[in-house]
Amino acid sequence: MDKNKSELEEKTRAVAIRLGARIREARRAKQITLERLSKDTDLSPGFLSRLERGESSASISNLIVIAGRLGIPLGDFFEDPDAKAAPHYILNRAKDRGGEPPLTARGYSYHLMSGELIDQQMSAFELVYPVGESMDPEVLTHAGEEVLYLLDGRFEFRIGDKTLVLEPGDCVHFSCEQPHSGKNVGHSPARLLMIVTPVNSFG
Image (cartoon, rainbow, N blue to C red; front, side, top):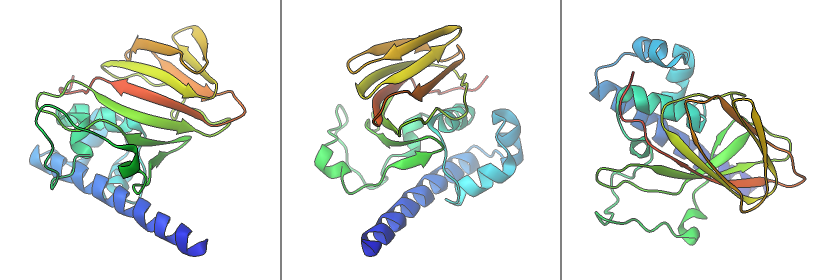
């Protein structure tokens, strides 16, 4: 058990390092300093530095904001530079995801489900919220559109002044510029499919 746990921790660390390196490469390619990125994203320089070194985890909302400031598709942070994907479709098999640990953020874990297409217009993620966990930060706003589809569990979603309780099969499509938040209010993990339009420009 200890060996398996150690191997999983090593894989998770490797994923975080790879993600951080891609963020750093994208930032440097745009000739943006950490301080400038911090001011434009409201994320601290210390957090961004740790993130680029693979020492901190980022929520999807953090990555959306960073990608928006850098003017790149969200999927660029996850693409495998050695992958030879077909130009018009990408197949993501469940058996292949089994060996890749999820990324973690405060409150939930996630896997990228989509890939990197030419002129990509959206990214898809599978999110898992343990019992009682919430989105972090508690209220989010960012550019773009989002679709949340609840696969398992029970999930309370708040947008503006509305509170919606989602059951399996329920789906909500919304503008991300509206303040939104969510929480697992069930007795088992809540599993969601999230589809978000990438942010390709800043401002």
